[in-house]
Length: 273
Image (cartoon, rainbow, N blue to C red; front, side, top):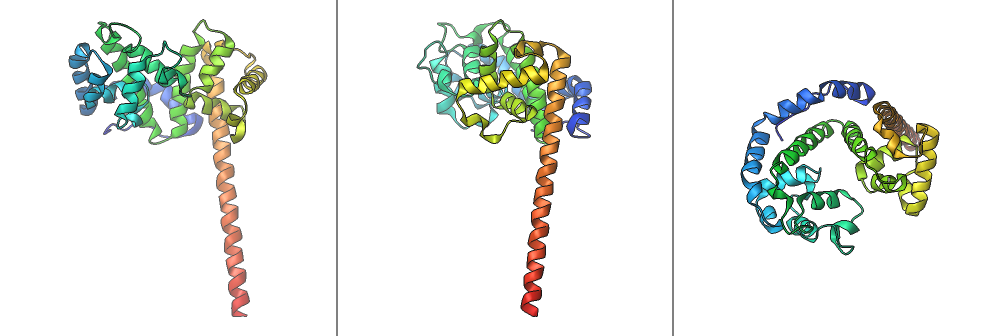
């Protein structure tokens, strides 16, 4: 994409800047030639699409559809996407319901090819809803090209606000968080959990998340994240922990290089002596 996000800094300073300028930057993105073409094509064609097969056959439509859910990397995987969309989400055997990343189920349900006799592409507001998502995710991807942590922060802030507002149980919300690669990364980093955390039993993961959330957020229920200040505190903790981890990694690499250099110097002196 030709659009480049304005990002003067990383970390929490960069996050503060994005919070202040993201709406204006998304408006600028929407006026870019590529996005304008994609959106115009989507508005013109999507209402006539009756099946997943028709959708994946049109690369430009598929680009917007996948981009709206942050799944742009799947653009070449037409057979996989077609299967996800065709099988819907109502059957326990449906592919989307079996995938760890629940974004696919969200996309399948949104299009409705496998869930309804008439897909949701026929709704008058459908194009507007998808295009709004497409712009947001495109902006996040542009930010991620410069700073992946800030992309994750933007994604988490948006997704958690929506998740917190749902009337589902706390455990169901945690399963949704753990089923999202982006949200899981933010929580695991913010809570200081080890890389091996994802390998333990899922129910145990939920138990650990609830305990950590109670301690660090003041509530074990993700519904607390409906509060903007609570989300802000979580994002700040994530960004600070990410910076600490990056610093430690740099120091470790620097120390290793210094040790190798000293060893090489010692061996040269030994050889010359």
